[in-house]
Length: 215
Image 1: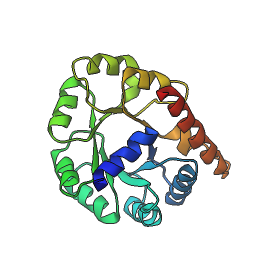
Image 2: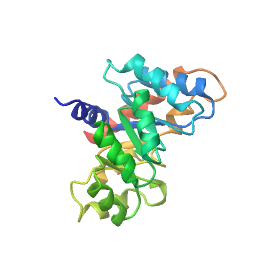
Image 3: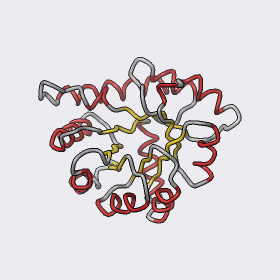
């Protein structure tokens, strides 16, 4: 199988991309490791994390042979995309449509998730080469919006980010999404305690909810 297809299959198998957006790089690393222990197989380390590229390199070098896809988030241009790939990122995620980011991802065969909100932006993202369209911010529209959009755009791989929880994840998959982005429901599970087994448990619980929703 082509490497890029393997990465896409990894995302499809679990149906989850973990969004790590934390202010402390060591906390971000501990959360990422705990989430991986809990079964997460695709992670997006956002550029807002201090030292994000170093963290991506650290995680990628540790897990690249374990079937874990380490990615970069909040990738706003081609320069940031290339720097992330050089650090080991195999997934690039943007909050908006950026042709430079998509072109760089395609050139180096990284999986791309392009942010979009309206039907026009969704179509433009796919046309520009996005592998997955990240519906962002998803909490303002909900699963019904996805179902409506996919009626004329059947087959477009949409992954909502924002407001996705264990309680509503089944509604998103029933609406037709290919995967979901989740953040604080997992990444902040240990906040204030330092007990990262809570992150492990949160990851397992969320993945189980997704598996049940898809079944």
